[in-house]
Length: 399
Image (cartoon, rainbow, N blue to C red; front, side, top):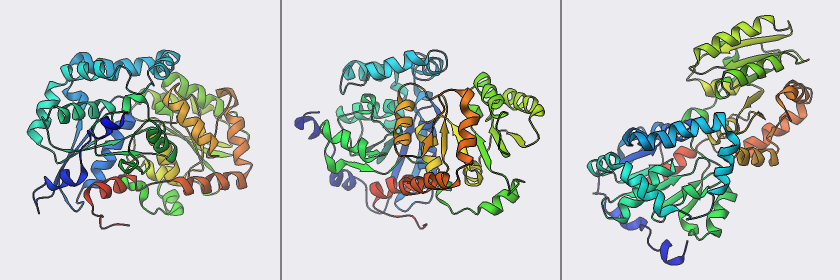
């Protein structure tokens, strides 16, 4: 970005001055249901904004609900198909498209032509502040600011550890990024330092609350003498999840293994069926969709899952060491490399060696304790509040 382009961005004092005194800010959070992380980040901000001083109203919008069928197919269905069926192709495209500002004019023009209902919605809402947790949303707000179709304070919240080129836009008030390295990257390509905040990725406020591990284990009928291994089965799909479950049945150490199956009833039934033949020293439990993820993470000793930005942030907030399995090429591989480098996770060479990795960590309590300590040092469970505090200039009445 050139110095001339950075000067086009909205002035914070001027934007604040547009809000009538004593009215409070109308906040619109824009996410996209292309992968769950963007939506969960939006939900986290929405939950944190409830009863937040200085906010008169808050609305959370999935922008793909306002997109044409063509764009919805491109950003949601095509993405899901690529990462599940041709992940190497997705990884190739991710790397190929990661050049700042390359092809942005064509992309924004294409998005604008397919997002007229969203543009009309934002015109009608007249938000004082927009927070975008997906680049498609920030592209539209940037276009509307450029054309003077809207007056709003535009904030972008990056939900992966690397700021891919698709996240970049010219006109904004502030970028909220997860790490010092992502902040450094933005500064190196010309973004002004005073408009970048390192806050972490927003996760649900429940992860910032104190939790009693012993009380929760009683609540969920968890044996306090055995370690708990939490498997995010629902994120892997049926076949991969069952392969992982069968592999874990070869563990040598006694443990309780909880398979989170999400809203997939077929997976839930299959896990229950397969684990009927589990050895006696392993206790398996298949769990349907839960809104108490923060509690299950609090009572667990290890988490097996994919390294999405939200999942990593939730695990760090819970000080829950991770075993990374089958990261998607592109953003998840970059996320994985980052937390492996920080000593907060391990990764098996193949699903066949998954039980070996679990046994290895459970045999080394000091190593697990060191991983937990590192996660506590780097966790930012209040990221959603920090973002709102930065924009509103107030603090909620919580700790």
